[in-house]
Length: 415
Image 1 (cartoon, rainbow, N blue to C red):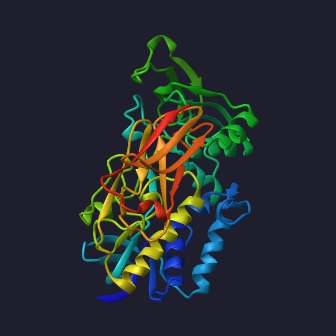
Image 2 (cartoon, helix red, strand yellow):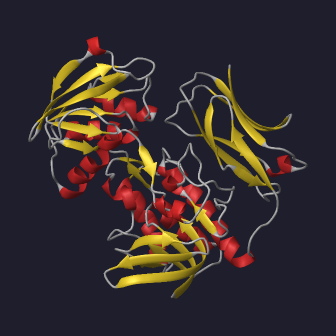
Image 3 (cartoon, helix red, strand yellow):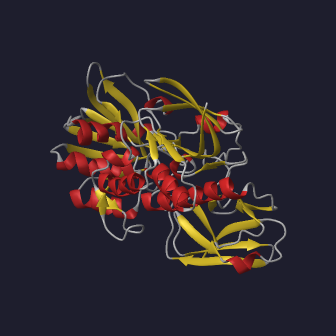
């Protein structure tokens, strides 16, 4: 049994930022466990730019952004166990992992979960048809092209308009492929507005809303797909079916937090985010276990991942130095057009301002977002437009927490 003050599970952007923040807040015995052969996580295959505008004040590619934080880890001498798969985290903070040297166990004073997320697969969609080569998740295709140097196809249809799908539409076009269509089952895109403009409109790629892939065709290799419009219940409208010839289908149909370890630890989960329920320090209801990044809820910008991970790292360091904070909690709930809000509860006297992060359930025009406790308005912001693909934030100042009772509600009002 090894002993370390703080164990970070995952060496992506969240894990690195949490480790650096924990170290900078006075806990030097920090280790990172990562299953890959180098730090960086998903950023290593995201060679497009657009990273770091908020956090670092410059526009970087994914590998460049990862390199900034990898350098910070190395400068602090933080120990990294690479090619190491964590297989269990217990509620009393025993971390079990395996690598080429065998099985290792670490008793930690605090644990930060930063495992990221994975893509939803074709199996989750139940799309009719055969199982030919040429059907990929968008992230898998991205890795094959950007990291391995393999071109996955020449005539492409993309199902789903999340950010990865939009970015891959541009990437495939730049590599000489013809992107025939991007189909989105919802009546609105799930990606950032900038990606819709830069990745589809700038390349003349059509986006079909309220449309899905109704059939996959082909034996050894994909020969084409049948697409069709859907009604308000997402049922295929038969008379709208049409065939598109293609050799590649990319699936960008959602991301799922990698929370098997979280569930094994007996941590309470949020059914909307599929991540842990946490407080403003990113601490779960398992004492001394924190969660941050895409394992907590799927982010649209890596800059926000780093911010959140820094709160988790600081929270873990404070837990190691000062022990548990046993003060009362105030629950936080999303209502109306707000689909979810993070964190799900806040200490009654948090000691510093608290940021609430939320997503709406559908696109709206001009709206007012309000956080209230009873009749007391804690924070408010007017947005000209909001969409499910873009995270929103409200900041509650410290002085607003005096004499709060009951719960905090976050609501949306159309203007």
